[in-house]
Length: 119
Image 1 (cartoon, rainbow, N blue to C red):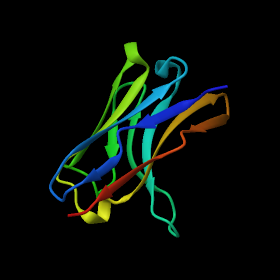
Image 2 (cartoon, helix red, strand yellow):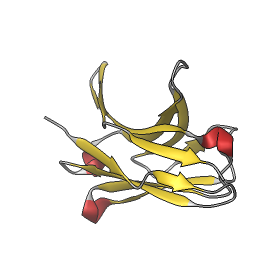
Image 3 (cartoon, rainbow, N blue to C red):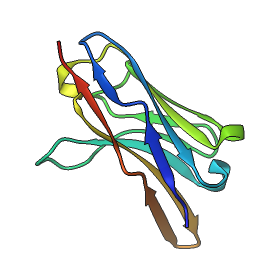
Image 4 (tube, one colour):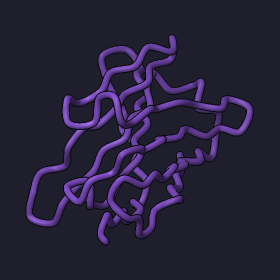
């Protein structure tokens, strides 16, 4: 069973930075992609950034230029560096790993970490 554990959330002032970490119980290189999402209560979960096995990245327009997804294969860890934070970035942030076996995709989620941007 794959387990993902996020950490690094907290309270930060507008304009500040945070780095989120997502540690996987197995090799992250075994996954086809890793991604970060966020969710505000009462709203749909929003895809923020994707990093595929080949190292290609994609970002949502809302975070492009401010957030960076990266990985450390040796530590089985994916990061989300968040800069220039604004109050609208306040949400619970989730890490997701996706494995693909033939026509079937398997998604694994972490438990989430709260990020609050406020003065």
